[in-house]
Length: 480
Image (cartoon, rainbow, N blue to C red; front, top):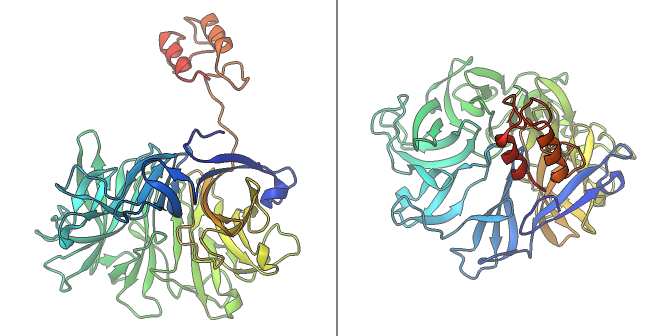
């Protein structure tokens, strides 16, 4: 078992079992957590909810259990171990415990920045933005951002995302005294300094504020888990509704630039984008690639959805589904994510025509990596991809690591067991301490290191130009 977890099983899915296009293709599929699995001290899993994975293969899964106390039955596991649970007391705010969880996410250090709902505080203070379990901003706190009026309180939080700089992008509600409405939406960066346990706030956009390249103001922003995206260096991709004509009143923005807006022509002649702050799905990678999935106007319903990468058509409803026998057509993309890895490849879900027993496919690029009715995991057939039923309801149904190597997906096996699966699409990285390349770190490698002592030869694991005691320590830490 490649991951030492309290639950889970690793199997290899071949071209035959995973539905891969090319003969001999292989992926590694790890069953992370399933209905019925025990969570020590809490209960047995009854449902799999939000999921996340990073480039180290670390993962987070939110789940419900059969614990009879519904105030303490929800959990979040991190790489197989209990991280937090409902009812868990927090250091701050005083007297508060975790009431429930919002969506989950991880940066490369395995840290999370998220919205937690709280039990204990009054209803006007019962949520907050946290770094791990450290409270940063509580509902009712005044914003310190220069872009808002003094004494502007936060009145609620929606989605939050964290990057490798410990910057958290959040969509929140405030009550700015200078904005006429009592609930005003903002998109805000919370820049956390974990060494000093302090943070600053940087306003990106606010309700009523000008939106780039439009001459119009923001009315609202996408608040769902698939409606915002960030990269590792502090760029943000967001959807905003605008004050202008209803035919053009939604835009997709990357920081201070308009990417595309409702009513713009799509790559398909005669069809225009019908962007929405709720149904349009978006993503951004560290190379600056942008992918979004939008409805289209001006044509028949059988071609009215499209995935677009960097302004070009990637896949469209009605197209022949790639790499499947019989050439079925794409009938829809469900309501789940559309993701792009740093390698530029898109990970996407499609529903296809033909046999309903095999009509759901999860792709990376044009290669199926999971297929309903075809992929077998631990002797059980995948019967639903992304959701908990066969309806294609896959909101938050899968996530990818930034590189695109790992895909974590919620699936149903044998029509009975909802399961979180980890798909590894890459080769295992070589271990630099495995000096002889035999797959283990042992005495043979230590012999090679000692033979190069005092030189810059094999065994200089820390790259300082000399094989010495520091390198011995690194080798021992990697000992198999």
